[in-house]
Image (cartoon, rainbow, N blue to C red; front, side, top):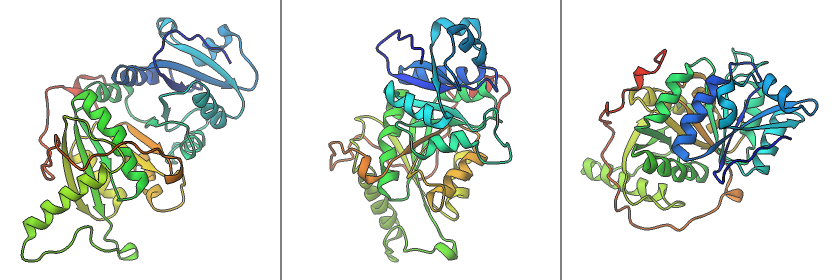
Length: 322
């Protein structure tokens, strides 16, 4: 492995396999690094150790990027090596595209991306390979709406901490979305108690409780604005639809790393349909840490399910649009 550490900033790990012009994913990486105050570390996984010159050539790294990043080389199986290096350098996050050199574009994502998503040591940003990189970078630079799907599980609630921290840093609106799965084959109890004579009280009480339970693990930031949204239908379809309708700039989702059932279907639909960057946090109750909580939701504004557009940052000025 070749490492050229240049600062005390946390690393953002960007694995590249040479299948795309390096400048495209690096443009997205730069937007994340600016938001999180991270340093970009580019990783190329090979079958043998490479010299610095070979490494830069394999990655296809533009000359102007070389002084701005740390270039790494690891030997091994790609997904295992990516997770191993991310752990070794204590990466703040990993940035992946859905498909690399050998990816089947008919699948939701390439096998390397899916394998990394199963058990990563840190959060993973994913951008669909079919999307214009400049438009995705512009969304992250002008972050205004962050959507967090929540289904009441511990893993889903964990994503609120990361999303709220990003919302505070970017002065963005946090949208917490709960979809009641009303499909006959997965029917379950209503998400909130039914008070037939006080329907408005029912919704207000549900929103208040939803916010409190959503921050059961993480302390909410002192100043932020959140929308609490309730929908019914197929969760994957409704989350994708609401993200598009609300013009979300980032979707933050947490799951348990299994592509078998349940929330994995939501992950698959997001990987198939997203026109925005995705941030996945993978974990279970056993490996997630608790932070101090507060019984108060002071500083948060619950405002129903209408999202007012904010056009103060024109994302559509990016090349190619979206």
